Every structure is written in structure tokens, then in C-alpha cells.
Image (cartoon, rainbow, N blue to C red; front, side, top):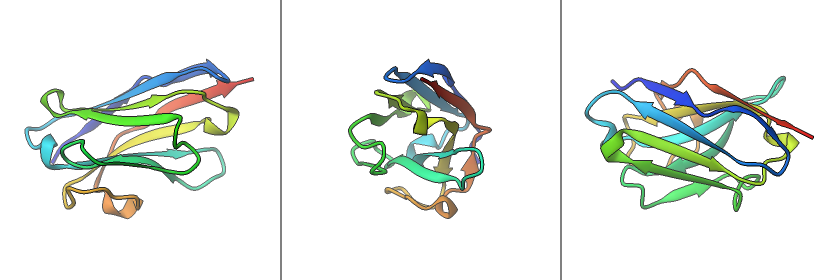
Length: 125
């Protein structure tokens, strides 16, 4: 079972960029599909982006498509979320997740069985 540690969150002005990183422990990272979710205050956790085991296939929520990019470097056990053109609605705690069951894209939180602790992203006007 892998463990996930996110980093890269912080405070950024609207229109700015951040890159989140998620480092996984364990030697089987390359077989996991990975995803990013976020949860804003008072709201349910929502899907942001997902990537398959090889990194060849990605999928995005409509609200971030064209602004966010998910990628992974299996040799570094790391998945990234590059976030550009951030707006106030992007403010949330961002979570990295791994699925040990599925190798392909998963958009439902229940498909993921390992979660990171979360990293706060705050966008100011």
C-alpha cells in the first residue's frame, strides 16, 4: 500500500499559477491510476483531474479543463497538478488519490483507496 504526501499549495492572486506535487511511497506506484480532488468549505469533495497508470491518458473536470494539467513521473513516484489562470472558485483543499484496483482513468472518489492529507490552495482577488 502506498502513502501519499502532497505539497505546493499556498496563497496566490487570481490569474496566477501553482504546481502541486504528490509523492508516493512504495515500489508499485507505476501501476496505480492517480487523481486530484478538491474540497471547498461547506462543499462536497469534487473531482478535478485523473491520469492513468502510464500517464498517456488524462481527464479533467469541465471547470478546470484548459487551465489545469495533470502529469506523472513514475520514476520519481510523483504526480503533478499544474494550475494556471487560477480564480477564486479554485480555493479549496486539494487531495491526491491513488487507486490500487484500477489502472485506467477514474473520476469517482470511491474508486480510490489511498488519499493524501491535502494541501490548501487559496486564491485571492
